Length: 407
Ligand code: UDP
Image 1 (cartoon, rainbow, N blue to C red):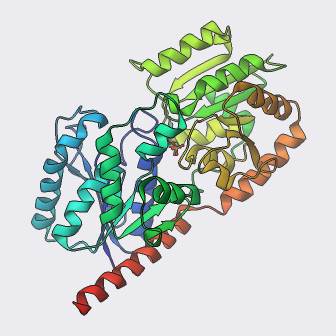
Image 2 (image 1 turned 135 degrees about the vertical axis):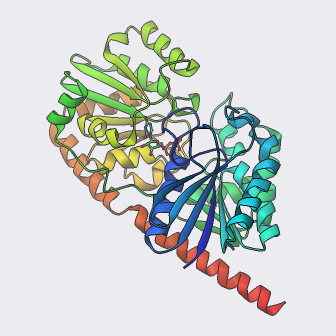
Image 3 (image 1 turned 60 degrees about the horizontal axis):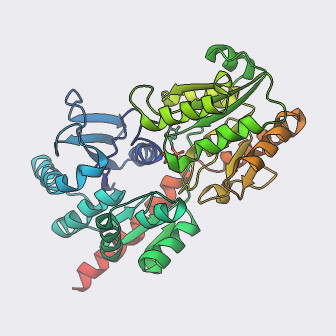
């Protein structure tokens, strides 16, 4: 049995998903904590309180729990969190002493947690594994206008230098770590992310549509955080360009219906394009409801400028829905062009519209692509991801034991 400390300073695994700062990383951390717990390990996921009514400890399943720690005001945004790292670090250290737990390994998620992991691994004398999920330099390269602080890129580099292991989801991310940050190749392990196959499986399409109140014959779906890097305006413009858009609805799931500037911008754009009557913005929905959305859809679209992995596309595939996505990042690794979906190399609406027209007009193609997509997703369970990570941890722990023994 290993005692594992997972660090997710800004992203709480039990927070509502699909809002500004809650998405794939939260899902990743929660699924792994659960899988590790199921295998008999003791797992604590450390995150900060963002709501005073949260209990300090939330059980995630057998052996796995979330530990909320106070660090900075509850409503601090991700951009302002850097200054509260010392507070979080001290709170973690005190929690560990008060519980008398000697963790065997720290796995941090995102650069802010990476900074915490870097300090604590020295203090506790345990190996530190870091996963970044996104990198400042990759984000800025992907889309003009993306701004990330210099502090972030510097911290990322230092964490890569000091960590014992670095986990990435794709070979491309590995190349970025090496090419953009000079990380050591030997430290990097590529482990693709997974999908919850107990939740994401095909539901009856008509029933799903009825449940969601979708009356149109054809449904196009986007799910995810609502932010410029996701390229949602490309999808709106593509819907405008469809050859046949009669009896079609575009459903955009994610974001907040109150006080969300990007969502308002997209609503404004759909009005300017004259398609507002065909578009529904639902705001974020609990993950348990997403299988109905995926199953109701004829096509799932993810027009992102960049995706380090793109869990939503894999979830749609697990529900048997064909995907039309940008040919970027992780999406290239699990979607086979023309077989399990369409990868679009250009960030412009025309090719998205063409592929959508083709799919929507061709039920046999839609069916066979959906079946192939599901078959691909079946190969990618979280359970497999957890096994590969635990193997990696074991390798590192043997190494660190040897270096202590040899000292
Ligand atoms: N999600 C959700 N409800 C929403 C929107 C998204 O539960 O309203 C979940 C979705 O199921 C997925 C995650 O949030 O697991 C988004 O992950 P993804 O990797 O696609 O995007 P990221 O947030 O990492 O950019």
